[in-house]
Amino acid sequence: MPEGDTVFRAATKLREALQGRVLTRCDVRVPRYAAVDLSGQVVDEVLSRGKHLFIRVGAASIHSHLKMDGAWVIGRVRVPAYKIRIVLETANSRASGVDLGVLEVLDRSTDLEAVAHLGPDLLGDWSAAAASTAASNLVADPARPLAEALLDQRVMAGVGNVYANELCFVFGLRPGTAVAELSDPLRVVNRAQQMLWANRLRINRTTTGNTRPGQDVWVYGRAGMPCRRCGTPIATDKGGDRVTYWCPTCQR
Image (cartoon, rainbow, N blue to C red; front, side, top):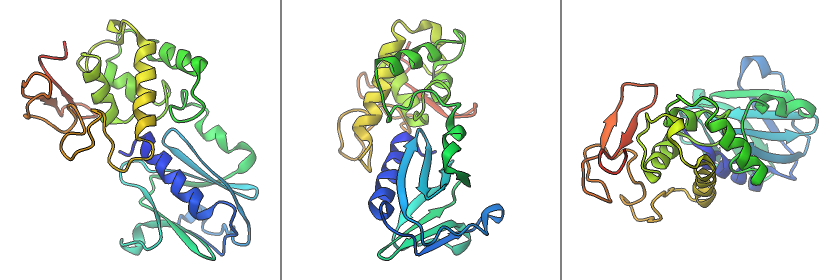
């Protein structure tokens, strides 16, 4: 599933392609909104909130969520036409929403109600107050497994499975560890924000600080491979809702 940094980059590309320009074509291929035509109006703003994206055009707001396989593509699209959920064109640009998990056209004045349930946005207006709220959210249920809590967008918005596993490694705790075991939850949420912020404009994210191919993550997707710190084979569990990875030695 795309994570918060992926959506942030998508918003940045859409902003460059559409913002401040008049739509010459608006083709929404979702039955409920098929009659919506925003052509002739100016794209005023593109913003992301966690894993959600909003394109504000006149009095309307196009809200999307990538879910597992979605993407916004600028320019030519090399996918079957049935995968394209929406096409937005200006005089010199084209943006296509492909396999979007959520696509709806909302009233701009109330569009953010769609994300009112989210915790603080890691790539939004992060502040000491936002961090404190996220830390409190994280440990609200003391028995909850750490990876599960990190993935809950109501705790803080933007963490996906890659970051959840990598954060567990960085703090030396296994994904199933209860959040009550956290000695400093504020440090955890701030590190999450730092990780996403550092990768917000990178196509190939890194959590290790090493951008070379094959060196970019600590544990995610590395089942059976040696831990970068101690050499112990990385363990994995695919039995839950999300696959988890950890080092049996470095993570207690």
